[in-house]
Image (tube, rainbow, N blue to C red; front, side, top):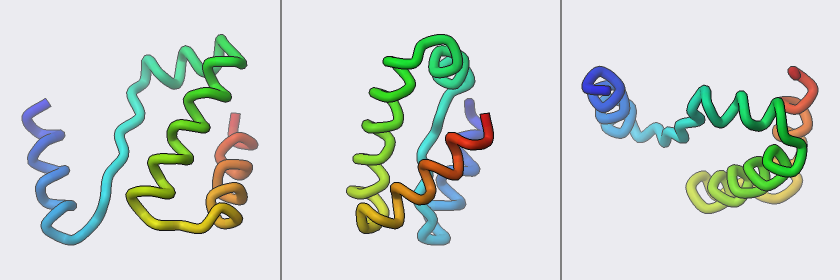
Length: 69
Protein backbone atom coordinates (compact mmCIF):
# COMPACT_ATOMS: atom_id res chain seq x y z
CA UNK A 1 0.00 0.00 0.00
CA UNK A 2 2.87 2.33 0.78
CA UNK A 3 4.37 1.76 -2.66
CA UNK A 4 0.97 2.39 -4.27
CA UNK A 5 0.71 5.73 -2.50
CA UNK A 6 4.21 6.72 -3.61
CA UNK A 7 3.39 5.86 -7.22
CA UNK A 8 0.09 7.78 -7.06
CA UNK A 9 1.88 10.81 -5.63
CA UNK A 10 4.47 10.72 -8.42
CA UNK A 11 1.75 10.43 -11.04
CA UNK A 12 -0.15 13.30 -9.43
CA UNK A 13 3.02 15.42 -9.61
CA UNK A 14 3.14 14.63 -13.32
CA UNK A 15 -0.50 15.79 -13.61
CA UNK A 16 -1.74 12.25 -14.25
CA UNK A 17 -5.03 11.20 -12.70
CA UNK A 18 -5.42 7.68 -11.35
CA UNK A 19 -8.47 5.49 -10.87
CA UNK A 20 -7.87 2.30 -8.92
CA UNK A 21 -9.85 -0.80 -9.77
CA UNK A 22 -9.27 -3.53 -7.21
CA UNK A 23 -8.88 -7.15 -8.23
CA UNK A 24 -11.82 -8.13 -6.02
CA UNK A 25 -14.02 -5.70 -7.99
CA UNK A 26 -12.96 -7.29 -11.25
CA UNK A 27 -13.73 -10.77 -9.93
CA UNK A 28 -17.16 -9.63 -8.79
CA UNK A 29 -17.84 -8.06 -12.19
CA UNK A 30 -16.96 -11.37 -13.85
CA UNK A 31 -19.45 -13.24 -11.67
CA UNK A 32 -22.31 -10.78 -11.54
CA UNK A 33 -23.68 -9.04 -14.65
CA UNK A 34 -25.76 -6.50 -12.68
CA UNK A 35 -22.79 -5.60 -10.53
CA UNK A 36 -20.64 -5.17 -13.63
CA UNK A 37 -23.14 -2.83 -15.24
CA UNK A 38 -23.45 -0.74 -12.08
CA UNK A 39 -19.71 -0.63 -11.52
CA UNK A 40 -18.96 0.37 -15.12
CA UNK A 41 -21.61 3.10 -14.93
CA UNK A 42 -20.00 4.48 -11.78
CA UNK A 43 -16.57 4.24 -13.37
CA UNK A 44 -17.83 6.01 -16.48
CA UNK A 45 -19.25 8.81 -14.33
CA UNK A 46 -15.96 9.14 -12.49
CA UNK A 47 -14.02 9.33 -15.75
CA UNK A 48 -16.34 12.06 -17.00
CA UNK A 49 -15.83 14.09 -13.83
CA UNK A 50 -12.12 13.52 -13.38
CA UNK A 51 -10.94 13.64 -16.95
CA UNK A 52 -13.68 15.77 -18.43
CA UNK A 53 -14.14 13.43 -21.41
CA UNK A 54 -17.23 13.65 -23.51
CA UNK A 55 -19.86 10.87 -23.47
CA UNK A 56 -18.96 9.59 -26.95
CA UNK A 57 -15.25 9.12 -26.10
CA UNK A 58 -16.02 7.24 -22.89
CA UNK A 59 -18.54 4.95 -24.55
CA UNK A 60 -15.96 3.89 -27.11
CA UNK A 61 -13.36 3.20 -24.40
CA UNK A 62 -15.81 1.26 -22.25
CA UNK A 63 -16.78 -0.94 -25.21
CA UNK A 64 -13.12 -1.64 -25.89
CA UNK A 65 -12.50 -2.68 -22.29
CA UNK A 66 -15.65 -4.85 -22.22
CA UNK A 67 -14.44 -6.72 -25.29
CA UNK A 68 -11.26 -7.78 -23.49
CA UNK A 69 -13.16 -10.14 -21.16
